[in-house]
Length: 133
Image (cartoon, rainbow, N blue to C red):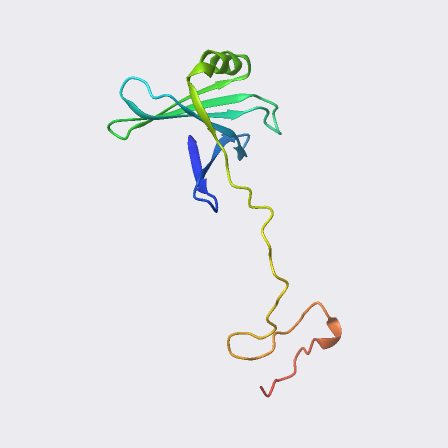
């Protein structure tokens, strides 16, 4: 799997690399486009939590909207990163959604106006009885 994007609250994109059966968050850099490419991005995964590999993936889009990817691991990845370090324009920063306020209000009635049942309290369970409501 190449690269996937998810939208955060601010509308920016967060890069992921598929490694060891899961999507791992990466640092995303925007590169200077070369030749006939419109967009070039570099995703850098310092260390996979499962296998411990360092992974770099370059995703490029050309004028015909065709996507090409280059992926390198471990020592080859570090050599490639050092080689293209001077072509990095900026690092894409993602919005931090962790500090959002969430209220504690909970509505104990459903959409029909009937009080919701709490099944965690076993004394209130009424199995086999018919309700008149």
